[in-house]
Amino acid sequence: MATRTDQEEPIMLRPQDTSTRERKNLDGLWRFALDGDRRGRDAGWFARRLDTDRELAVPASYNDLTAEAEVHDHVGPVWYQREVWVPAGWAGRRVVLHLESATHRATVWVGDAEVVSHEGGYTPFEADVTAHVTPGQPVRISVEVDNTLTFRSIPPGEVEQTAHGPRQRYWHDFFNYAGLHRSVWLYATDPAHLTDVTVTTGFAGTDGHVDYRVGWESGPADGAPDGTGGADPDVAVVLRDADGAEVATGRGATGRLTVPDVHLWAPGDGYLYDLELQLVRDGTVLDSYHQSVGVRTVRVDGARFLINEQPFYFTGFGKHEDLAVLGKGHSPAHLVHDVALLEWIGANSFRTSHYPYSEDVLDYADRRGLVLIDETAAVGLNLGMFGRRDQPTFSPDTIDDQTREVHAQAIRELVARDRNHPCVVLWSIANEPESRTAEAEAYFRPLFDVAREADPTRPVGFVNVGLAPHGQCRVSQFCDVIMLNRYYGWYSYTGDLAAAEDAWEAELRDWAGEGKPIIVTEYGADTYPGLHATTPTPWTEEYQVAYLDMNHRVFDRIAEVVGEQVWNFADFATTPGIIRVGGNKKGVFTRDRQPKAAAHTLRARWRGRVAG
Ligand code: BDP
Image (cartoon, rainbow, N blue to C red):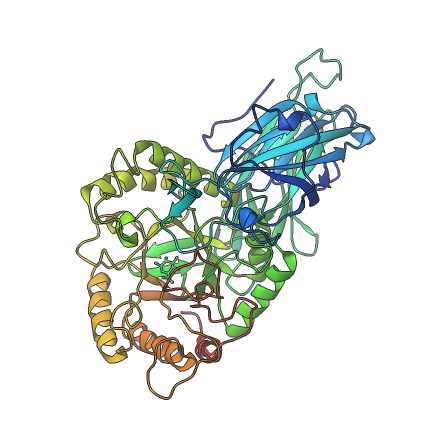
């Protein structure tokens, strides 16, 4: 078997229907059972019909689908199971089972055979299941999904055994939703198939260029019963513009295509070319795959953030995948509606806080010309923030070298999944970790190398927390862009916006001295919709407006600030707590997407602003 795999990252192509590929979507209702005692595997739950009367929806978090606390607050594995008919027309084809995500880890069986396990709740994984299915027959698919967070997971957490059962603790501020949050697919290809593609783009004058690198496998070797062996296949590529007109062609697994009179992808102008990849043998197209391509460049120059060599100013939000009933389940309707609200308010960007989002979100952002800061699920690597000041964050008993391996893999998987999206302009490898100690520096240094090795074309950063202000942070030295979360006037100087303004400006000026671009990735104030006051009163709609105005005055005085992303786009679910009222209320929109007063303030500012 001829294989081209010179990369370390996971190799996968998102399932799609083409002239040679066919998908079958497995979303819908699956049988569901809790397995807090971890009995399922030994008892062989995968080997027979799951003994349960529960059926839950995929995609969705399971937590809010029933009315029961035991489901909502479950800690440990759960099982999903369904049967699927394998299309009769797939005889002789290679059949793959693909899960877009399973939060936070999963093991999958097809019939009685264990086919794949995956760690990490927000990136896809798949298995070649050809040997375990019979076209024209049904097959049972079972998935054990485990929501447990430990010091060896990203994000980290700890399970406390109490007299009333296990309790999951973690150090991040959103509810630990779990389950099958995104689509599950069965798909078929020819035994000889394309395995991956990387595109990078650039331009000079009116000529664009697209560099591509394609991976493939030739299928069973010579003499195989299906007769697919023989000469190595060849790769042919065709680039078409948005009207379907051919603009360039190429041959071979790597190459450069030139695009005359290029229409660049740019913020607000999501122009995409279509790169068709074909695996060809003896004139027959064995596999065809379509990769969208936005031709654009990204670069940091001093304290400027350049897209297509033009200074770019980020406006927008930190978001969450968070919805009533669905939890973190992907919903195309809500995606369309959220992006409509982003466009209404004049946002040109958002951060995928605090984990990789559904690939549908990235595809749509590409098409809408939205700019993304793409973040790993490394949130809550900061024990001190949550009252555990006695324990170091980075130590052999807490977050250690093994965790760093999991974190490195999370970075590789994020980059492998999203590197071809023009909307992604900056990688965020962690949110608000402890970053003041030598241990933090040692932990992060190699992770920046991992990110840069995986993608030499985009800037890399992490999001700094107020506990590690300028002069104390030992990790920001590795960043191309400084990303800051600050709550002057909320968590500090609460209610005193005048004092907050002075302190915030002083700190920002220190950061500006680094000579790097600064994006304020979080600033925000909890706001209870309908609460009002004439005097500056935290939690009122007026205070959120005044708080944002104060921040904007500060940003506008500092040239190195190249972006403002309010925390948060919408209210979202958290664990219960005495500083949260029905979740985190820093949304500019409520959880059901109604605007608070601040939405109109932001709209006036952002719709008036011309990028740059
Ligand atoms: C920051 C976190 C974010 C929180 C936010 C807040 O990055 O996840 O939700 O503060 O406190 O610490 O609202």
